[in-house]
Structure formats: structure tokens, C-alpha cells
Length: 402
Image 1 (tube, rainbow, N blue to C red):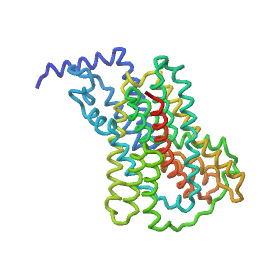
Image 2 (image 1 turned 180 degrees about the vertical axis):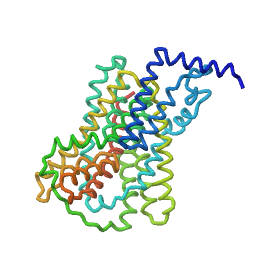
Image 3 (image 1 turned 90 degrees about the horizontal axis):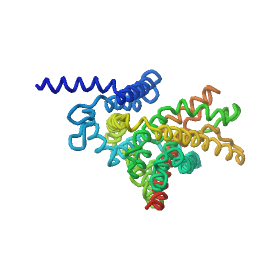
Image 4 (image 1 turned 90 degrees about the vertical axis):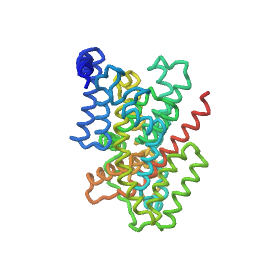
């Protein structure tokens, strides 16, 4: 055992903590602690926030003398386990695809098939993506002078920021990775998954600001019977083909989501369906969370662009929620049987958190009012809508960048 090396690493670590860089490290430890606190104390999606927070701690530990990087990250020549996970799961888009297989196996599209009109709420709730995309194009060169004159980078960064509004972490990672935004991966991924976790905090005030109590009390009828097995089997196949033809760039994510759903609905792969819903989804969520946390190096995170991305991401999330609610109110102008406008807010991609939030708000107004299934329909539509929107943005931006 080389005691000299151990003592040297210990001494360098102590010196590092009391240096200028050490102050930034302590700030990152506080941010990590806040994420872990929200996960444990507030129970805001602990399966996401706790691994992210702990990964942040590992990534900001004092560097070792040999590599001048935290041992959990290492260097390209001598990678630590966090770098290995990033290269194997995020840099090649594996984790988002695997996550969508698990999510697809959890989704029951039967409520949507019984009321296909709900798919329009999944589309309307993507308004914030495109509004934020345009806003980001205007703001990025103003707030980040180093991007001026680099229109390609501005377009790519604006596209990834816009997708944050869908509260769809995997699609956000997919878009950011497609455009090679590695220098901005930390704030983009943290914003996407943090806002997914904070759905119960962010959505209710927006919904209440845009609806009256009378609107929140609207009841909606629902029939309990499921759709036919044939339609449930054909649906994922049909959606994959249509999305793959119309928006080819969405095929990897739509295909993995629909493949997971086909495993669920085919009736002959129950064991694989349960594995996808439980073991696969849980394992990938753990690895994805801690890997996202590892991108939160102080030098990459404590920057002005982080504040810009977090702020625009929140702007997108609020406008996505507002878009769904306002669309429902607009549709009600022409319907005799009214839709509870809160259902429109569930059109974002955060499945099933947003649907639960809407149902909780409905029962808070009237304990006997149940709109969960309609909210689930809008929610799964939003899952599809955000993927297609992501594919559309990739296609459009690719047309303009050189």
C-alpha cells in the first residue's frame, strides 16, 4: 500500500476544499443536498432526485493527484464508473430508449382509444415547446455573448431547451445528445428531470390561475370497459408506422415506447412485460439518475447559461400546461358536454404524475369528482406528442444548420 499517495491525495483534497474551486464544490454539495432533501422529505419523485443528488456529490468530490479529476469520473484514458455509464447510456442514447420500453409497458392506451379526441390535448400541451424555442433563439445571443454569430449552436441549444417544457426527460436527453450539446448537458438534463419531479408544485398554481372553480367542478362521464384486444395490439404497430413515416427522427423513441406497450398488450409475454415495468425501468432509472448527477460538475454547472436554461425550461413547462388548459377552454365554447379544463394540463409528458395532480385537484374541489381516466388519456397523448415534437424539432433544425 502506497501510504505516500494516500496522504498526498488526502492533503490535496483538504487544500482543494479551501481554494476558490473548493467554494464552488461546496455550493454543488448544497445543491445536491437540496435535491436529496426534496426527494426524501417532500417525496418529489425520489427515484429521480435522490440518484441525481448523490451523483452530483460523487462528481464534485476533490480530485485525485494522478488525474486531477474525481475518481468516480476519471479521465477518457482511465474512466471512472460514472464516465463509463455516461458513455454507455447517455452518449449513445441507450438509457432514453430503455426507459421508454419500460414506460410503454406501463401505459394502458384503452382510455385514449375510447375517446380519441383526447389526443388533441396531448398536441395542444406542446405549445410551450415551440414558444420557448422561438424565445430561446432571441434570448440566447443576448444572455450568452459567446454564442453570437454561431447560429447553429443557438438553434441546437434552443431546441433542447424547448423540449424541457414537455417534462419529458428521455426526449430532452435524446435531442440534446443528437445535437452534441455535451457542454450544456448538465443544466439541460437537470432542468428536465427536476421539473418532471416538481409537477405537483408547478402545475396547480398555473391551472388555478387559468380556471374558475365552476370549471374545476365539471364532471366527465367514463365507461369502464376496455377496448378490444385487437385494437390494443394494432395501436402500437400503427402508431410506430405512422410516426416513423411522418417524423422519421421520432422513430427510436416512439418505436421503443410502442414496443414496450406491445409487450404488455399482446397477452403472450406477461413475464417480459412485468420485467420491463419493474426490473428494467427501475434499474435504468437508477443508472440514469446517478449519471445525470455526474454531469453536474461545478465548472459546467455554476455558469450563466445554467440560469438561462433553468429559467427558459420553467417558462416552457408553464406554457405547456397553460396551452393544454386554454385549449380545453376553447373547445368548450363549441361543446354541449363540457370538458374539465384541468384535463388539458395533463397533456404534458410527465406520466403519470400530471394525471395524478389533476385528479387530486379535482377531488380537492369535489371529493366525488373522478376525472383520472380522462387525465390519463391526455397524459399518454402528451407522451406521444412530446416525442413527435422532439422529432419535428430535430428535423426542422437539421434543415437549417450547416
